[in-house]
Amino acid sequence: MAKEAEKPKESKDAEKKSKIADNVVFVGRKPTMSYVLAVITQFSGGLKEVHIKARGRSISRAVDVSEIVRNRFLGDVKIKGIETGTEEMVVEDGNKINVSTIDVILVK
Image (cartoon, rainbow, N blue to C red; front, side):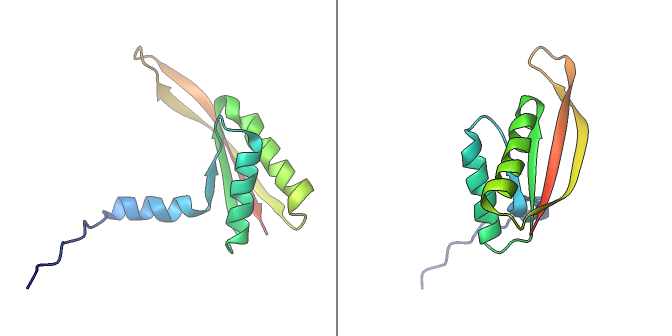
């Protein structure tokens, strides 16, 4: 009898992160329509709530994504809330800087 290979067990932290990230779209440097497609895909998959998150210079792109989704593609999507904040980051030279964050919550 061949012994079955054991599957690596995911830690509880990794499991929580995967559950949290299911309805989150992180906005970065890609073209805006890439993120619009990601949000539409999330809603098409049956989700009722999607978070659009961004930091720093990508905040304006996140706002654009939410407005394009609402006004051009999914008219029944509403903004549930907008959360802003600040994260402290350590840059390469060891200095700490503050970076603004945004979380736009869309619901269907």
